Picture 1 (cartoon, rainbow, N blue to C red):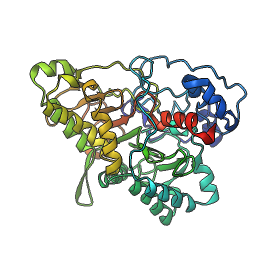
Picture 2: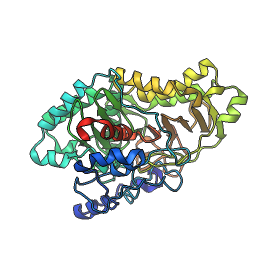
Picture 3: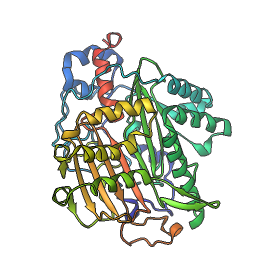
Picture 4: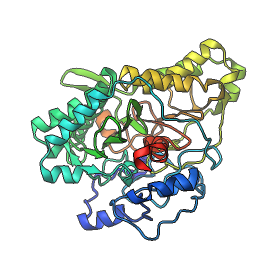
Length: 445
């Protein structure tokens, strides 16, 4: 269900807390047992995935099975599949694949020279600044399904502590954590998305649903220089998942979007999500007519095209479009420019490592396109390789259409953009690195 298709219902009443919790936790719980670390080693790769299945509570489940989990069934999920009516997970995490089978040996535990000390320090300071009640609501285990319970939809019921619940001092500590993890561009993008959400809510007279404080913090694990941990910042049109293991960082899935994407606020024009739009158009317009005939699947664009939005961790999607090996050197650089619009929102050292990873698989990267190629045309683009998945999707006007003089039900527009970056083959949320850590670390054997 997309925002355009009533995924965001501004009149929806919140669910009772107990009913919401039951809904969110309606899935098969299989947990990692500290005493089962040796079993992880003997079970091998497939069994370890099952043993490290998501844990929402940290309590043991006697029904957990050591047998390998089957590949996910069904096709890819849509960009708005995480709407209010879908608040549960029915599958273990498997990851995005082209055919239901993961490619092994893509991700390893190794030194990247990324400086993670500042983000560890900032996370510890943020936690220390919370009250005991706030901390209990905010901190989850590293294996928690809370990693996967995110959505771009405004009315989705979230866990953790919201900005609205924090004092100014606590908000500053949260901002410091974002500053430690994100580049200046990344931080500016998060602030602009929130700022437009507030202004658009004011424009339509509904700041109860659309405001700058309806964004939630959760932390998974305990900030550490040696053990896996991470945080999630989650709200309307903005989701950041940030995983840390030693000096390795995985910043995915991340969702960036806005409606509108440009708005005058206090006499200033605020524009967001423009980099990915410009980079995408620059790439497709660098192609020859013959290349475009391969890359462009459709000259028309539907309101909802995203395949791996919320609650689509296990999407199965075959490669489509033009392959990187068919591009010139200049065209490959423009292709990287699309990805860089996303990777560049992390700190420079983490961004360099991520882009190098993508560059190593550039010949095996595919790009597919739907829609127009003009400067103002609505379009959808997907960049897909063994190690990265990027989607930029121009949506139809949604519940904030009135903020920019549009009407719901009209065609897609660059004024409403959804975009996402993911790590296929099992390493979203750093899941593959977590698995390897528990298999190989001597203190977990």
